[in-house]
Length: 468
Image 1: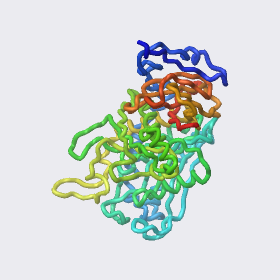
Image 2: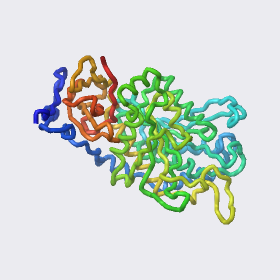
Image 3: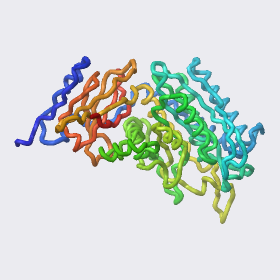
Image 4: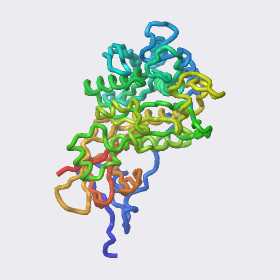
């Protein structure tokens, strides 16, 4: 038919192209966009990642959750000096355990107690209170300026958010998330990722996200290139409040319209239809591509919301600073075992106790996190300044971007999908270049660009903005 055209990708001559890139420069003729480029497939875990996943220890995770619950309460306003009970004792124990992990790193991992004095912030912080994050940093070997953060919060609460005295074991919410961050720090301490990984146990979450907000602000003030942040919050149980179980699914919450979006950015988003292509959505797609597989044993269910309905977590302060951030949470919550006084009513046990946790489930969530963090930290970073040229009317699409500085960068790929598709479906290899011309209309599909390392690892996709 006359309207049928060969779909081609014309590569920039500004950089030398690999043989692999040249081999895919001209694509087979087709009658529709669905035939342009190769079908995109998930990235399979390599031998090193599989070895990392095997080292995730369910029994260590269980021991961590039980030890944290044994501090009685970890309320932000509880004692900071009692050696056996309260948030101070929990803080000191986490710091000691993280330091043990760092000792295995050959000096590459450092640990700090990141403390500040929070002035009164009624109603949840009625008096000036020291809030301390425990932060372990594994410095990257080749691109240490690129940073990825994984966290859980170690403070807890019971029914009354200001009750700093009664038991608040906080096993699921959120000793489970802290146990994951600590287990990843232990397992990855002996490895050499290209980028820097930060493992954090933050405080003040239940009182208003104070610890995470302090950490995110410090990163922003220092100009830190945080390319992804993950919070694990309520990841301890596969059992719903009706007794049903879903032990092989983890929810991942990812916002659409960016929290930090400016009016000018909103105008562009509306003009190009980018509501489903925020950096956090690209991050969620990346997680599914590397961590939803038989090696982790988990399905990642992406939820297109910033968080649960009218609720929030420690990723939000990072979103406020313009960093891509998402939240892991168990598939269905049991509200009898979070934010509840420990008690028995009508024969039913209430309270966030270790006996209601599923430790095999937490270990699998830890593997999802490990697969994600390692894949990010051993791939090139997210491409920067990706643009679509708009200075001429055409049914072709011209993409340009800035070349990254990763020493192991091999080249780039253009990905695309139909506007109604939830995830990227097609990929075109374009080699080590900073331009590509795709014979598809930017009116009809969404495009993205991702970097490829010499090890074959792909980084997250960057969604382009217009360039006049």
